[in-house]
Length: 196
Image 1 (cartoon, rainbow, N blue to C red):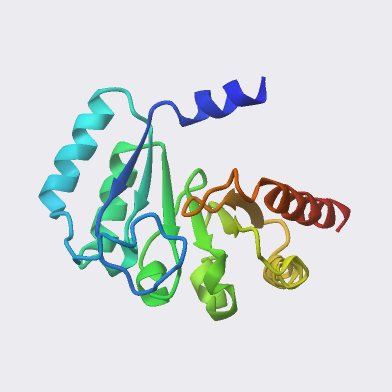
Image 2: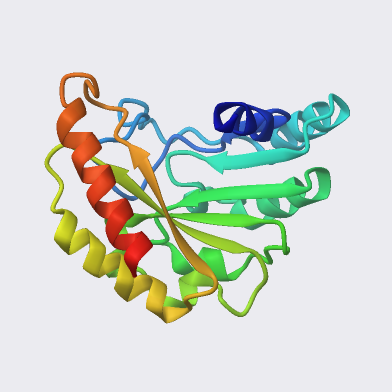
């Protein structure tokens, strides 16, 4: 049942890489080899949004590289809102000034890369603006689960009802080879979050 709910949720969603450039170097990044700093032109982005909207897509994920380093980031975000019911923004939030320029709606979701949580400025969380906030925590076989739990507690304590955590598997290594360690880490973190 749960598997089908996830599939239904993902239907009618498009992911768009608006730039290959990034201002960080995450060891697990699936786009690490594509760092040519190419960016999508604003007119092309709008044309694609219009196309997907006309084909019944109602959700978009703005991705990259780091979307906030796109020279027209604020405009792209507004265009995405024009065409889609929900806009997901994946960001490391290192470019907090650019984040402050956008106006998320109630359905919009900003997903923050947990790798940069210690550098995350409170103003980059845009807590005065609507929408959901998620911490994207990549689970690896060698993570320090205890420190991660403390950092999750620190960040979510800023605004407990608005900031949530989600666990994601590292896609850059063989998860089957490290299955037992990963499952143990996920269970450990999940149990600690649940008991908090």
